[in-house]
Amino acid sequence: MLPHILPRPQVLEPLSGKAPLITSYDLDALASAFSEWAPGASTRLAAFAAELAVVEEGIEYVDGDDSEWEEAEELDNFAMTAALKDHLAPESFTLTLNAEELTIEAPDSRGALYAVNALIQALRTPGVTAFRAESSPKHPVRGFSFDITRHFFNAEEICRVIELLSEYNVNRLHLHLSDDQGWRIEIDNRPELTLKASSNDASGGAGGFLTFDDYERIQVHAGLFGLEVVPEIDLPGHTNALLVAYPEATPDGEPRKPYAGIEVGFSWVNLEGEATWEILEDIVSSLAKRTHSDYFHIGGDEVHKVERPDYEKFIARLGKLVTKHGKKVVGWHEIAGSELPQDSQVQFWTATFNTDNVAKLASSPDIEFIASPAPHAYLDLKPVEDFPLGLTWAGLVDLKAAYDWEPSEEIPVSAERIVGVEACIWTETIKTFDDLTTMIFPRLTGIASVAWGSPRIFDEYTSALESHGRAWSAKGITFYEAPEVNWN
Ligand code: TNX
Image (tube, rainbow, N blue to C red):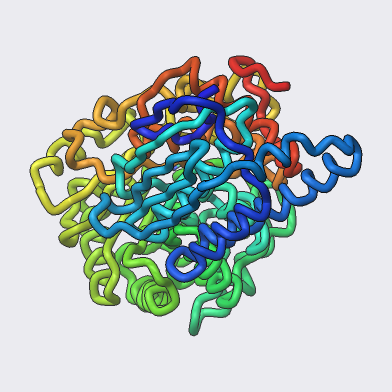
C-alpha cells in the first residue's frame, strides 16, 4: 500500500519491498538529528516515538512474539539521515524509506516538519510499501481563519488547534479577534475593550478574551510548528463590541448594548470621527507592537449600510495607519476598489458581491490574493443538509467540495496572483472544542491539499483518510464521519 500522506506529495512512488519496521529507538535518534535546525520536527517526532514505545511494550508483553522486532534488528547497513539542503524549494522535502535507508532532505525547518508529518502518516499506514516522496508547496500561504468572537476559544484550545493544523502543512493562523458579539484581545491603553465588551458570546454565554501573555504564548507555540499568526480587527463593520466599550465612536452618538445573536452587517463606526481614529491608533499600534507577523488583517467585510465612497475613504486611511505601524494589510475582498498600500493581500470569500473590483485589481501587480471561496473553503458550512452544526448560506461543503477545486477558477484573477488558500471557520453555531474539530476534520485535509497543490485523486484521498480517522480517534479528536470514507 502507498503511504497515506496528506497533503499528497506531487511525487509518490513505490520502491521494491515492504517498508522496514522502524522502532521508537530509531525515531528518537532521528528526532535528535533534527533538534538543531528543526525544533518542531524534532518535537513532533519525539512525541510520536513516545506513543510508539507504548505500543511496542504492549506487543512484547501481550504476544511474547518478537519475530518482527528480530527481523528489524537484522536490518544491517540501514542508514538514517536528516539533511539540510539549501538548494531545495522553500518548505519542500524529499523522503525515502526502504530496507536500506530512511532519508529526509529539506531546505528549512518547515520542510523538515512536513517531512516528519509525512513519515508519521506513512508509518500509520497498514502494510505500507517502501517508497520515495518529493513534495513542494504550490502556495506560500496555507492558512486557517479562526473566529474566536462568536464563541470564544482560549489559548490552550488555540494551541491544540495549531498542532492539528500543522500536521497538514498549514502555515498561517488568522485569528478573527473582534466582532459584534465580543472583543477578544487585550489592547494597551484601552482596557475598556476587554472590561466592557468581551463578556458575552453569540448565544449569551460567557465569552472571554486573550491576554497579552496568551497571545504571546500562542505565537510562540505557532512558531514552533511553522505557523505565523495574523491578527484581524474587523473594521469598519462588525464593530458592535467596540461601540459598547466606546459610545463616542458610534455614528449617531447613541450607546450600544452587548449583542448576542448571529445577524451581520448592522454595525459600523463613525467613519471620520476623531474619537474613532484615536481608538484605532491605539488598537493598531498595540497589536503591531506585539505581533510577530508582518501582516495585519483589517477585515472590511459586510459593511452594508455605508456609502461606498465613504467606505473606500475609510479603508484607504486605515491602510495608511497599518503601514505607519510597520505592517502590511490583509483584508476581505470588499477592500478591493479602495486605495491600498503596496503588497496588500486581498482575501476573496464570496462570489455574490464586489467581484468586479477584484477583477480590476488583478492588473495591480503589487497586490496578492488569497482564496477562501465559501462554497469550498468555509468549514462552518454544513457538509449535509441535516447536519446538527453549521450554516448553509453558500450551500453545503461536502468532502469533495472541499477537496476538488482550483483557486483560479473561483476568483477572477490569474493563478500566478493567488499566493494563498485559506480555510475559514466562523463559530456562530460552534461552541465546544468537539464542535470545532467536527467541522474541521476531515474537510480541512481537502483544502490543505488544494493549498499544497497536490494531485487530486479522490479515491486515493478517501482511502488515505481511513488511516487519518484512526489517528484522530486514537487521540480523542472528534471528527465528521463523511459517508465517502470507509471509517473503521
Ligand atoms: C460571512 S466571511 C462573514 C462572517 C460570517 C460568515 C459565516 C466574512 C468575511 N464575513 O461574518 O461569520 O459569513 O459563514
